[in-house]
Length: 344
Image (cartoon, rainbow, N blue to C red):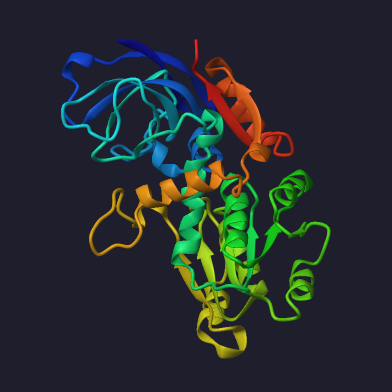
């Protein structure tokens, strides 16, 4: 079966290529899918498109050029292996696969969840970003009534702020793009701050009764924001690294370490919140799994508790991928959630 896929061949070079899947060799735990929609993950995909991630030039790395981007899709199961029991032919499924018109997935190794008929397929895609964001809550010691700051209100940051709000915490969304602050407010985030227009530390102290935040979430992946996180976090608080750190940032590390070690500076704790710290499927000895988080996030979206309609700004054809990447990179006030429509 022939299909088309998006392929990044070098820095700022992306387009469509044809490929073929031999459906006759489908394994017992595999499923063949006809893709309906995929969602662009701006942080990861732009890091590869712009070569911000240096691994794009290193042999044997996961994102070595040429690279097929994308990691979430919704589509129809055309064929399933003999050992596949959770989805059947004709089912509409949510899965982890790249931007392509057809996909071959191993359901024993990745997420492949049958969607109920009442769910909107495009909205279901945002489940993936929600499970990433949920990792911040999972690793946090934050409790009901705590103050939480989220730096960066892209897809993951917005959802992190929503999730901490749903968990009963006082979330403060922080971004330098006014439009993203407006979207966060529409999604139920009570407090938003633009640090390019207000003194961030002073505003956070004002919103928290002079205490600062028990939990601060860095959802950008920009190392230069770490000291800012320290400055708004309450003594004995925690800083959660939700965004994957990228790029080079030169600073005096002693200043950062003093926030961790010294009592007058806060004795702060740093935590990593990478989605893959948890097993894909439920496993004895681990309360959380990516599959469990997926089902919870999907349920919250279907109930309307986790807002995603407000995040969808564009639906494009695959041929417009270059324009979409450039928009996400250079027009952040206009572009946020970009869905690719593979229906033909």
